Length: 241
Length: 244
Image (cartoon, rainbow over all chains, first blue to last red; front, side, top):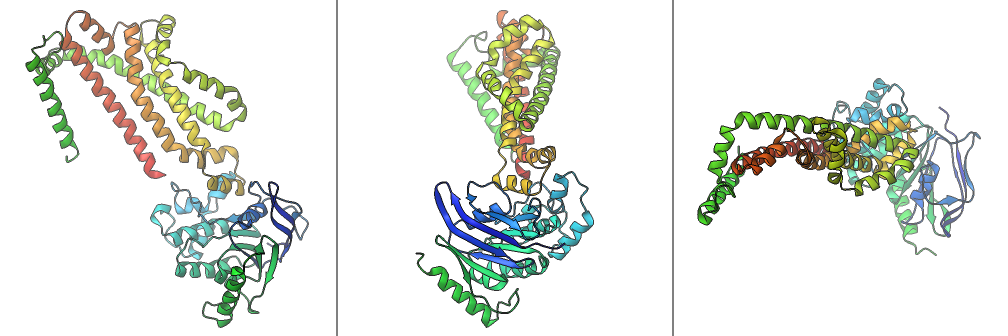
């Protein structure tokens, strides 16, 4: 699988109102592009647009892949909620995509993915018996099962406790290697740890953010990560113009 | 056992109250028989009551089976087909506005005094709550699950069976509870309008003959049947509630 780069252009508009003007965003192939910003500027809306999930907003430009092929069926959205089916087992949740398309689910691959997200032996459990972090791991396995080159993540770890979140960030960075990832977050530390490229999304447009020169995922204890986090906090807290 | 005990206590209290009213007011037994008298009527007419209850219960069962099956099929069909929704939904709303019990004389006129009119009345009365509750449940998929099925490029029928249907089971359970409450009404009204057998028929006959104790015995039997029916539906509905 070769992941394409994404080009996003235009004004993000909702009704007559411009949420974010003059987007001109390139998300390089097989790298993590992080969009950081306050609530209400349309981060989640943009995530939904990239993933082609119905939403009331529209983009005056367009979203195109660098290989010129349509995006249809090549993007998967991982949402803040785990979207697990409560009546289905962990394994049935992971293989849901194939079953919904009427294909024969690859159980061996699903079990392998569960193993890789650290849920070995959980295949027959129901989601209600899992912790928040475990549920999000199931959602990650389900996302990986779809095997799409472009992954859009909309604050997937924001409901997790700090330690679980850090573990999930590491696991996700490893497991999504080679895919073009767009991560929406309002956590500066998450951006500092995971981003190849980060942008601050505000009502006046996108602003590129400085990051450490090292490759993500960056260690929590690395002073460069922490100083990048502090810098991102400062920029996030500036009064928007 | 701990759940049974309060129920038995309440029953004993009700029976005591009933007997007390009979004693204190000195009301004649052909107006209000006491519990002992009704109990005796139950035992003395056990064979007759069982026979009549069997007829009523069989019609109730067949009517429920038909109404529920058709209701589930209709809801699935409506959920799958936008054309069916456009054509049939207004019709269903109109049909629900008609008091179905008022149709009993017409149904009896068309189908006669035998079992078919009872079965059709029960089916009619259960069909609408089952259809509308289940259909609502099927259509009210939470947006997050709707997003998910779109992302996975689900085939409509697969989406229906794997996501919409399991999600709608609690709603179907509510419909079944309603159906279980309404169905005994329907069968009794159909028997009152015209029948030659059944508990409702027996109540009319014994009332006419001044056998009030037998009428109460039939009523108690009917109430027990309704209660058991409701408990069965409730048990199923609770089971589904727990899964979602």
